[in-house]
Amino acid sequence: MLSDDELAGICDLFGALTREELREARSELAFRQGRDPGPEKRVEGAIEAYALVEHDGLLLAGPAAFPTLPEGAGDLPHILEVPEREVDREAVGERVLERLRAEDDPELAREVSYDLEAWAPVDASGVREREQERL
Image (cartoon, rainbow, N blue to C red; front, side, top):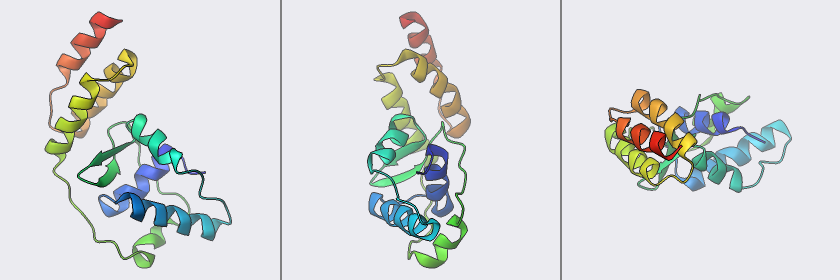
């Protein structure tokens, strides 16, 4: 089963992927490695952990990820017909910031807020201040 960082690495390889493209990439890798691609809920878990971020129908490596390419992933651009994509990091950062403001886990929100500021040109200090009050 692929880790959150490996899922992020696959998305990062292309800039961003749709859910269907990521499903196809996971299946291709699993076939090449003789493994099961794992449950689709792995993607949801990576989103919940901020390792993946969903924006405008695309998944991309999130602020909490250390994108890592799993074995065989280097061949995916030759196998999948997926264009490289660029995503407006500031717009995505604002969306993640909104999500952090609504986060139920104050510790996670605080931790991710630091990662977010390094990942996108946004100011997440308000999230940290609010979460510090909640702790």
